[in-house]
Amino acid sequence: MSARSTTTPWPLVALFTAGYLAPYLLPTTVGRLDAGLPLSATQAGAVGSTLLLSSAAAGFMLASRVDRVGPRTLARIGLALAVLGYGSAALTHAVPAVVAGAIVGGFGSGTATTVAASGIAAERDPHRASTLGLLCVSALAGAVYLTVPHLGAGHGQPLAAIALTALAVWPLTARLPVRTATGHARVETAGLPHRRAGLVLAGTLLCWSLAQNSLWGVSGRIGLTQAHLSEVTVGAVFAIALGTGLVGVIGAGALGSRLGRAVPIGAGTALIAGCIVLSASAHDLRTFATGEIAWNTVYPIVLSYILGLAASLDPRGRWAVLVGSASSLGTAAGPLAGSVLSAGAGFPAMGAILAAGLIVVAVPMTAVAVHSGRQRVLPSIVEISVEARPLRGAGNCATSPHRPAVSTPTYENSYASTSAK
Image (cartoon, rainbow, N blue to C red; front, side):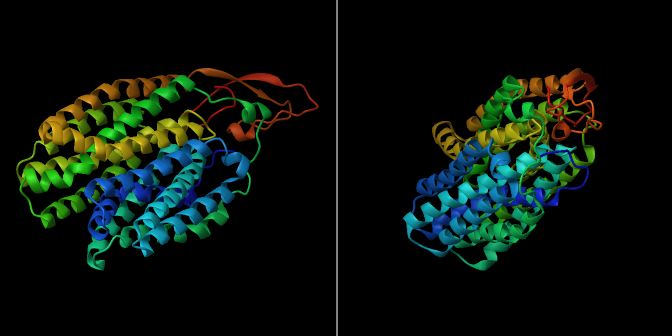
């Protein structure tokens, strides 16, 4: 959103949390829809997928419109839709109304995520901001998972939690800009930079997310039917796994950019593949818990670096939004894919297939990260006015309409972006 900031963007982190909470709570949301409404497990899963598809649609539709509408206005629209959609779905038992609420709420979540991703991409350290967002949403989701079972049966509790989170974040939108500061006209009219890298990252992240959520969608069934654990034990494993996920996010924040992005993304995805094989083949508590906990520890680390990589491809955040929306598509399709694979081939074979797919997509994802790292040490040409102040980011590139522009070579640091890429 304009010049890159050096302070912690708490309004954007809070908006990120409100937008990402719905996918994090998908298992309990779908499970309670199945138990509390006249829906089959497949139908309840379809409602969850519809919610996520609506969220992804918002990202694709609004990726290039944040600057035009304004971050504050768009964020408030998204939060209002989330409160209205999820709140109404939580208060009714009519299935059509619940489905409609999920669609409206999902679009609101996607809108909030779009604004947050666009703003985070403009930060000096987008990886740190993404890590803070993942830390907050992981902590909040963990608290909901521990609290909701004590609030009684029914489908409304997780939906109400998402609506209340959106309502709580609303006051922080006052600290968002009404309009994004306008940079050089060339920045405003230019197409997407790094188009090939962005498309590769979006396509591979869709498959990456699909593999993760294929396992997540059937993990409960693996614990109950294959490992022969009780529901209480499976729930405890999931709670511990979410807690270790927080440790993973904190570790990613502490590590920062010391290893670059290629190593965490490539090696981390390979580790996730191993965790999936372990979890899917579990026949006892030790194997099941080890696989699930290790997976939930590594997953947010890798995701934070992927989000940081997407943000680095475009300082206006369009690739961050589009890549995140592609991830939402994979998330939505994951539970169905996991159910089909496990029903047709069994859990261990499903795990092997998903792991092989992850290894395959890790190669182009790592290649994009390596290419992006090399791009940042090459000189680029930017247009600045003869009266321009020192370059800090795309938002500061302004050419006077009355004076000729001067082409000046500059070098990009690890996070700052220029108007020419």
